[in-house]
Image 1 (spheres, one colour):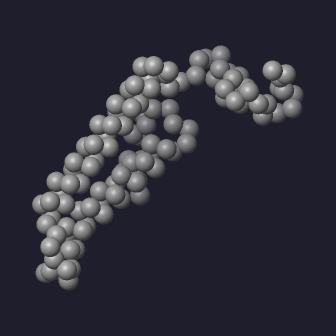
Image 2: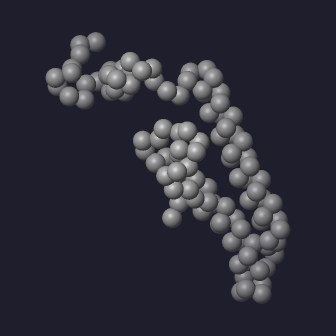
Image 3: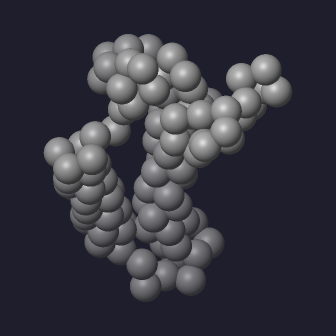
Length: 113
């Protein structure tokens, strides 16, 4: 189960051929659950060793999620402003193999660079 199924890509207008956005969202969800679960199950009343505060775990998890989102938006914003995140229409037509990596994916389209 993912944090957000396919419609999230439509909502945020992301063209993601590989389900990278969903994979990262799921990783973030499991990371956040791990932080919160330590506060819940570390309690002596639930068999834990104690010394763990649920409030502190919630605050730490919220700060970690906030930091990850903030820095992610900043880094991708800088990359988008300086280099761009998409290929040109001509490069998309030729494909990344030829236009970026300069290798042919099929023999009939091989180009001598």
